[in-house]
Image (cartoon, rainbow, N blue to C red; front, side, top):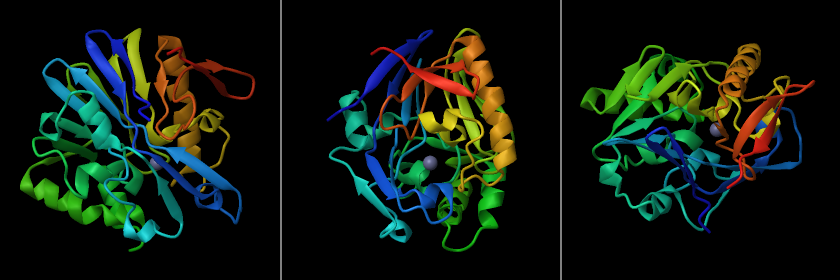
Length: 266
Ligand SMILES: [Zn+2]
């Protein structure tokens, strides 16, 4: 059941991978005690940029983390590593892994276990600092020891703000969901695509007023969501929605209530 989608941005090829689906109570995402179930995909992104193979976020990893057993269910027939192989690559080929932030559903294959022996993993220092302050049972906090170890061993680079990771791939700090949360622009100018990570992870989040119980700073998230989606629209950049189970590649358009996502034909 491969859902791989690929498209070109300039001379780069962008592939959208799939690490399965999680099911959880809506209350775990929106706060409160909502009993409804919510479903989220994990669409990590693989970019072939010349000699550089770059992965944007890294799913849940081989198994659901221990602390989420009972509150999250993971459904998958295939995973990110299967999609990587199907794209014609081995784990050794991945040279750069950009982590948008340190939630367990984004860092899995990169950290626990480290699955890409030749890769440098990029984390914003502010995301690490915030994670250190969180309670022991928080997923972000659990990422602190592996990130610190990786930084010590030299395969994790801590970033301080916006940066160009390889030519044509630029991270931009857009906090709100977490401190130091980074999005990724692939390409330049009018020939680009946007990976929003958890700033706008699914179609419902294209409404800037949606308040999420999982945003550290909802007001910053709202402001950044509007700015970033406005820029994506003006640049005509398709947006990749990490957690969207349905149409995860959309063009955004301003509406009276916020933004709508128009599926990119594939
Ligand atoms: Zn997430």
